[in-house]
Length: 314
Image (cartoon, rainbow, N blue to C red):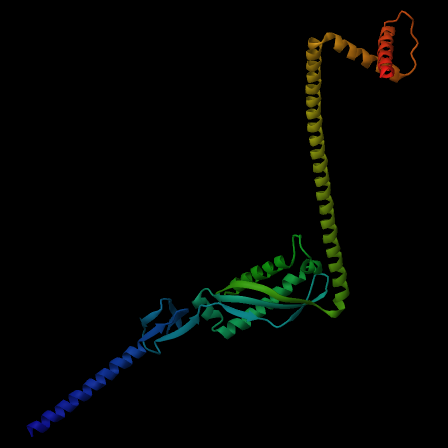
């Protein structure tokens, strides 16, 4: 009998241990939760959003229905809109394909206003359409087809879309951050194409004219610089030539002085011949019989006659 009672007590004790273990596991399951990397978990107590858990890992909570968990994906999301037909400031039609990249900035505000990713896409899509309509309503057609070099072009329009969209999201309390809003494609409708082509042609002609004017300006600058360089080279060459000519004349004077010192009679005779040659080359000369130049001619005639007699003797 005693062994039977001991066996029944052991079985009951084992069953109790198993029950306690099961309760422990169940309690651990219902009173803990994990946070994955890239997620935040908002803990709501009796429907009131109390706290936001951002650290990845295992955390403790009260079991449901006391605490309810809402997981929020904090990564960046992309929303690509369908093509929208918009009107510019001149009431011209444009087909715009836009997109927006966003992420949750405040999880509790996000859950209170948008609840989920699908709700966020729907609200942000409406906000982006509204923003595009407002921005393009004050945008001229020339602003979005301009080649460049203007204060307002497509890049400026895109920046305005992103800025105004963020302002609208903040005003509505969406709790999101617009990281990028842009225009993926811009298409002109068929009835707008002639005006677009004319405007683009005018823009490109303006750019070509600007490039041509700049080229002429550069050519004129290069030409002026070349002329100035040539003038500087010529001036330097003339100065060097004058210096060389002066040095040569000085050397001639030195040689003449040395020749005069070596043989004064020969030097005087040479100078007499040069004077006579110059006189005869210049033309007819009428002088008196007592003029000193007659001595020069007498010397020349005497020299010529002597040479002739030597040739006859030979």
